Length: 188
Image (cartoon, helix red, strand yellow):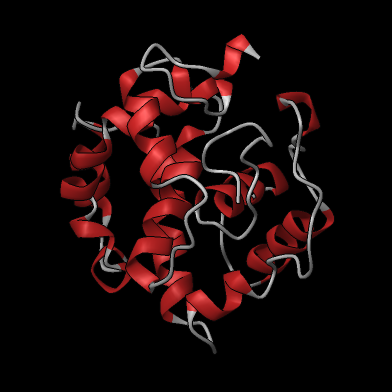
């Protein structure tokens, strides 16, 4: 399919060919298994901030987010107070949405009270067994039973802004599921 071949001649998922930033993200990060509390907390936050926006917006502001949110170290963000919220609301290097900022702080606090590592909790929802690789973008779901279960569990544990769609995007981004299309060079 011609839509899968980028200007560099590489066959990728169509969205990966829409901008150089997307190609780099697609080729090196999206769908690669990711572990570690801080890294997973970052991705959880960024997926929540992306809600209703283009991922390219978040991708291009990622360094600003990292600076603003103390490197996404949950223990540090959990200590943020009202002054920090106002600082973040004034920071043009991030998406300035009060509800999403508060959710990032709420989620950091929830992580610090977990009875198991965040890594273990999130990865417990990764589907087991072989899945059918999507042939087209239309074959890629927005939610799955696993992402719905993840969202429900996270909400019960005090997390915010973690609906089934956000959780599925997190699962895709962190390699819990591999939704690279069958004709993409990253398909394994």
